Image (cartoon, rainbow over all chains, first blue to last red; front, side, top):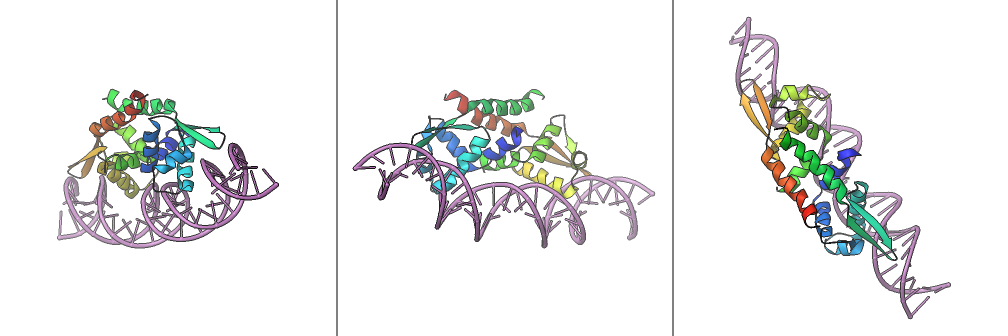
Length: 88
Length: 88
DNA sequence: TGAATATTTAGAAGTTTATCTAAATATATT
DNA sequence: AATATATTTAGATAAACTTCTAAATATTCA
């Protein structure tokens, strides 16, 4: 765990775009997939990586699974970056 | 370029440790390499990726090449993370 | 119950990545 | 000039990653 998983998750353009989409609010897997020219299977794989990295959370509601940003991990990462500024 | 190269560079543990080392100040390639159980060739490869991502700068002085943090790109990345907090 | 929709899982293919060894380049020293 | 030191470059290999297709699971609706 730690930062490794988080940074790996952030190192892919599609996944960062998914996070950008979720800034506007909760979206289902299908709605997220509509923004990309990829199969649903591929999007599902990316969502899983983001979820494992705790960057998003998933909640099933009937037929759909809704994904949402999990901001707490963003805090930690920002904190890591801040250490570079402070120590200067 | 843009963020892609930067996040890719940050997605490796060794490279993040190199950045942590450089927080204390400038170091030569050899001094950096001494902190890791890897060949100099591998360290050189990682330094090159960090340099291409503008996360560090290199300056040759005689026999040595000194590496230093380049904080300007850190600013940009912190800015990207901040957008997630603000838009909430 | 059966068909349609939403999403995930499994397995495969091609690409990228991290690392090594060996060789090359550049500088300093004797 | 020859040797030693510092670092990079080139080429190879194995592991990890992204993406696809096909199949599986879960849910809703007629």
